[in-house]
Length: 511
RNA sequence: GCCAGGGUAGCUCAGUGGUAGAGCAGAGGACUCAUAAGCCUUUGGUCGCCGGUUCAAUCCCGGCCCCUGGCACCA
Image (cartoon, chains in turn green, red):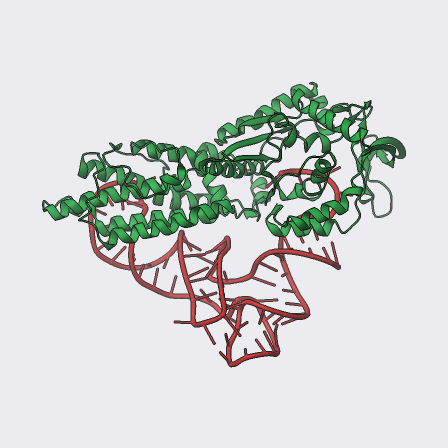
């Protein structure tokens, strides 16, 4: 069995979960569930990033210790995972001993090899903000903005990682692995970035300035600063499991360059470890009306839609609407359009009418299709399924989930059209043997088509898929590829009478 | 400024060197198993602008305009 290790970025606990966090989890979950269906032994990791200045400061402001603060926010992120039906296998926190231990071991190893050295860091420091300032922070006239208070130039010894000496290696690596980053054009951005010489990376902070972190094993007066702490989680979580390298680190486009595309592969390489096999880089959700909503006091928190419409509907929208890698707009209006037309009207209603007709015209038991009573009407639907089925796996493998869902929905539409053509409600009124045979065939066909449609989207809407299978009296087999074969698997199954999966919301007033 | 992506029906997008496509929205119709859902038909586009190559360009080339994103630390 092929193993497949995938991660999300770990979330910084200085803020609460929002749509971006949710999307990344759902996207990764869809990939993970798909790989499981394909038979891979999947390990899915997510977690929280808990050290650093901001956490320290936020905790102090609340008068609690940083660990308690981190515990609280980390719990919020874990609650979101449950709420979204995320199937992660592990959850790592950077404050855990298993993580700290690995970080320290790697830092020590690199220090011993001479990859980390001590040098003086010179810069302008704001005591009030407790941070070094950049040239870009200056006012146009060269002074520093008020908020920084007194700014002094200070010289501070720190530890640096020899990033620059691996620049050529990285460029070569990217040229040799053109598929390292998805979407591909992002890799060009990285190579563009690498045209400028890299600076070595400052990886430490003295404890007088930052104590909430992992101590350097070779100098306990310092903690390591962000990169070795946060990025290494992908490795530390599986260091003892033999799962490295990861198949994919899933990240947002904002943390591609330089952290994940430059620092991360170089850090690993310097430590004698291979880079992840790929980086899956997604875009951002935009909310154009955000300002307006705020001013009217009606700011929409997209996560509220989970409570209102359920995790499946929310997951469906995110995956259906977003072309992985690009940006999309998130509006309630668009959500409702997708929800109503695709989930409620098209799929949800198909479920309900199938159950109802099976109950009314066949005593609630899916009849066997009558081979004699079957013609090009059935062939047409089956033909479309075969076409859809052939596209399904490649589309999902290439992260074209939005297209895969579109195809699945087109099949659902075709199934609805098939039902109209056969009109079982008319056949049900006829006592003729020929019509009765056709009735059995049409009921069997619609049920089977529904089962297949559900199988094709179950990684996106796992909860709904389970419910639909349940009302069809069906338990899917272990091998997903086999489930995609048209096989009249529902023969003789006793179905439920009704199921309104995606209730239509009360119509909303138009603005 | 540099780099990348994009500008196609009201909206979201697909697409190919040879009479422009889908979904949603809009209009009309027949039906009734169903979540006033579903089905059928249908209105609608100088395919950003200007040149060039070609028998033929939305698709190839050149120039221009506009939008979005990246360019050292917010998914």
